[in-house]
Length: 258
Image 1 (cartoon, one colour):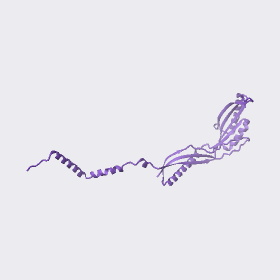
Image 2 (cartoon, rainbow, N blue to C red):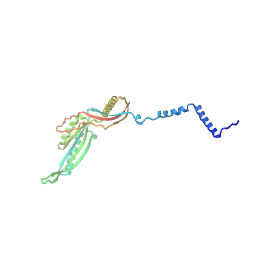
Image 3 (tube, one colour):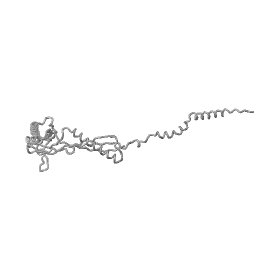
Image 4 (cartoon, one colour):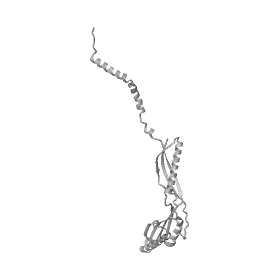
């Protein structure tokens, strides 16, 4: 009887197959793990940018607050016309000194009086032939005066006009508040409430809930109706109407929608 030994090549193949089968039997779960791998990879895929971006609503709000003024700012001055520039400046200087003396008598503090402009210009006259000729000079000085007791504003205007006579120039008056911070804070609160109420309504109408505040910006505050008015001063006391000062604030807000 003849016994055949397996060839070397066949022996190697059998050993390799046995090793692979033994590894599969030993682990038991290797095949299922390989089958589940694609599903696991799909589950770990990051959501798209559109899915991650939350819905938002952008609104603007306007708030107003008003109060009685406690400050009057007068725009007053003096002006003189003379034959020469030197004479015009001298007359203007004398009238300006009188004006400043009157303001001190009216208990206006030095810090509340400021020169806004000083001018000297030739005065031209046109003859029958259409030619212009210098016939004199006009000098003037304008002042900004703060009256902190606004009930005395008309009295101050009348006193200046009476003392400086024809040289007086009453250009106008503006009423204001000395410290607008409290008025602005009230207007800001009203502006934010307005923006919040609008955002809440938009959230409800779109079937959402209002989420966190994402951003908030404030525009420049304004004062509609500043109370400026021209004044004609003919009597010692000039009647004036201060009215009210109004501050207006606008904000822009972005909220999340949940």
